[in-house]
Length: 185
Image (cartoon, rainbow, N blue to C red; front, side, top):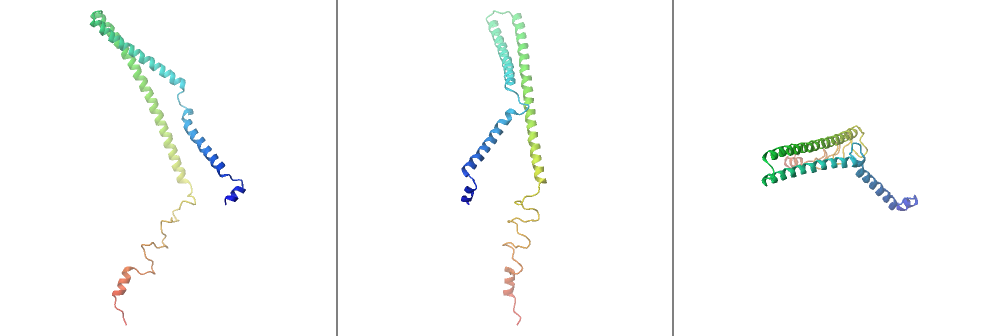
């Protein structure tokens, strides 16, 4: 057999190498596919979003530091009560506005992520349902038994199982009855 394959030009190592290459390319494609799908955020967009968020976080931190400095200066009696109250309310209002912006951005991004996850799940469910419908409408192959053809594990009505005796073979009960019954001679 192997001689015939060699004469026909079949080279097993080469064939295996080609198959391995094809499988590797497919795995590589599956790995990179999410990076090029539509609806993805580009690297530039992520940098812009990150820069804006970092700027807001830095502004919030500066305002919190200013509030701490105000408290320290008030303890050192460098600020009057009226000035402290006015500056504190201004910095607190500004810090709350920045925190609200950060929360809004986080909520918006979380909503985008949730929507993307839901879309991906819906696509996956649709693909799964399409495969199931395709499988149910396809004809059974020669390997798959049909409803009329029993499998090797299922005996047919004509073939008795090991537990069920045939009509020709006596059962244990029949043998016992034969031994007990008197012979008419």
